[in-house]
Image: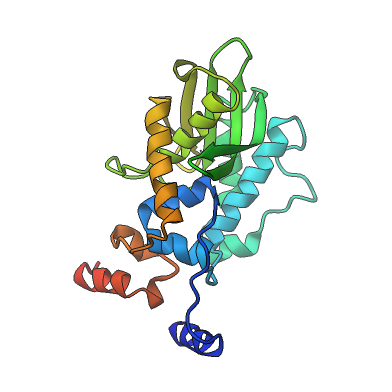
Length: 252
């Protein structure tokens, strides 16, 4: 891949620095916060990425929950056979069914959400942040619970970015739909383990400042790598010198 990139640059007359995007997804903000270089190779000058079985399984389960939540579909329908190939590749046959069953056993299974896959656009500091919220439960006059379904593992307790995705969703609830921060609860539901991690919406201004700082850095073209444990699972490590150096210094 690294050789291919050098050849491409030679054909194009040298590396070209595209303009940074003015519209960034919520997941892109998180990716930038974890490693600006990874964001660059994902959203500014995109390079091919491997869509692993875990991502495909996650997509399958999210789609099934969305249909189920609005009263469509049953546990397994003839035209909804899970992607067995991706499960076999992951070495975890039956995972889709287990994740579906975990949802059916959760406290959300019998509740119709107010919104599913709710899209939003936030204007922040001259840029736009967009995303889709998996589910919002609650009524107009009462409290809201914003829920994001996760098919992976619960993050480490010291992961300072673990809550950022939900914080952005909470900011959308406050700034777009006029909710008071104290009326918004943010919840990750980890289907594989059955764990829930919830926290109340904090200071909306603080979230806005934090996200705007990342957007401003993107606009300035600041894309230096920040190597760390995330390098172990990064698609771009074959051609990231900083990432390879960190991995060499931190084996295991």
